[in-house]
Image (cartoon, rainbow, N blue to C red; front, top):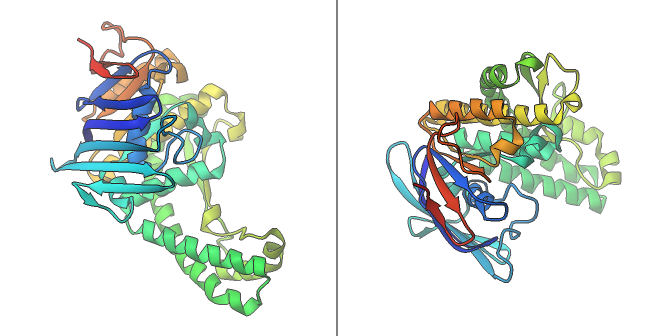
Length: 359
């Protein structure tokens, strides 16, 4: 997938911005605060319905504005073109595809797959489980679009059980909802496990190239409940404790996974640099897996690669990119030396009012 044109209005520092990247590597050059990361953020919001930065869904809105808008013209593997639009109005989204209003954001997510790596990405290894579930479920969605409907049904049933817990309802009231939760959780679990099993060899390949000192890698996946027993049975057994806590402590919403390297005892023992490189392993593995699973590459965003990785790792990544027909946006505070190993692709100078091709 390529983005041929991106426009944004009232997005962080930009009152209005237009960016027409090329199909391959695109360097976004400019000082801190110029808006380089905001361009990556705009593409990411179209793909995920949220930012990779901290804050709520309205946080990217320019100070003093009542809304922000993002527009993209994308080209897919069959050369079909789509015009995508997303606006954040107060506390709600308004989405369009080719001028038609959309009932939800799922068509945008499907039409604009974007994978991101940046300063926040080490949270994938060291942060809360929500980060890893988001990574996993975004991957699942792009090969199993029905997973989104399953998740909506799961959340509805989970909210109902949590309400019953707070109401101190009778045991009989819980039974139908716990059966629904078990049925939905099993289907979600099967999709997640299949996705991670397929992803594992891609992780092994990328880890061997970027972090060989950590040894062989595997995925440790936990579904969120004791797999030796049915979820409904476990929920029934923990109702009293859940009543005390006021929420459901077991289920698909508590799933987690981790990279386990044979050369290191625990993920907490990773150095900062190793954690960043391991997060990049996940990013590159996901990009390759996506291509083989969906039939095309996603768009790849790499934010401030030079400060997140040492020069050797940065050069390895750019070489990796140069050999693949994928679109990538990279940010840097310094112009790339034409004679360096990073000199592939186009370069754009980003200001708070424009994004201009260099040369």
